[in-house]
Length: 124
Image (cartoon, rainbow, N blue to C red; front, side, top):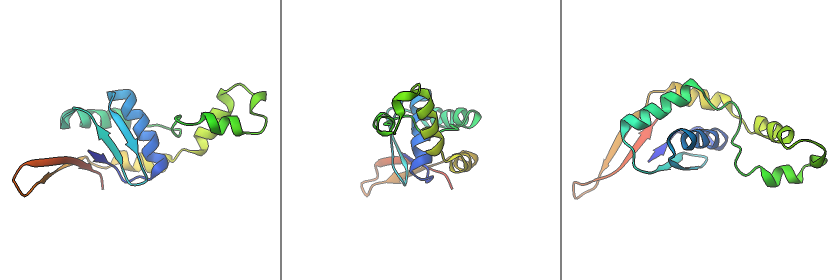
């Protein structure tokens, strides 16, 4: 299932939160957040509601280790200091809040043989 059109920074932060809340495997990209796992519309709608109640204010924490290690003087500070700085610079709160303010809409794709192929959730 694909979700959002918020851009890479917002999608990465949303992906982290979806994984935290629902344990779903997520892959963020510039265009969408690809979700995999066994879940229904009601679970996904509940996950979005819970994220909207506590939206990610900072950028994703994943893959910051090499960036922090490459910072000049990074060994002078507790790890939390450069991590907070980088996550605040990687945040796109405006895009996150906009996406979360939109209604969730589920769309099905029907193959030519009449079988349901894939469900998507679009926000617009």
